[in-house]
Length: 64
Image (cartoon, rainbow, N blue to C red; front, side, top):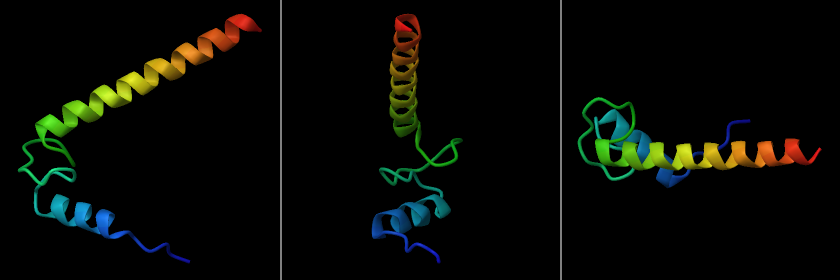
């Protein structure tokens, strides 16, 4: 059974097909889904989450 996509997700897919950013609808240059500004924000968020996860794993391993 296929899950129905939300209106937001359908809008994002349509923007990407038009060559625009999935978040702010500005023109994309060379990234797959995001413009330069949104890609930078996305990268910073992912890096921060990764660092937090790694720190939690290290502290858990040192306690054991």
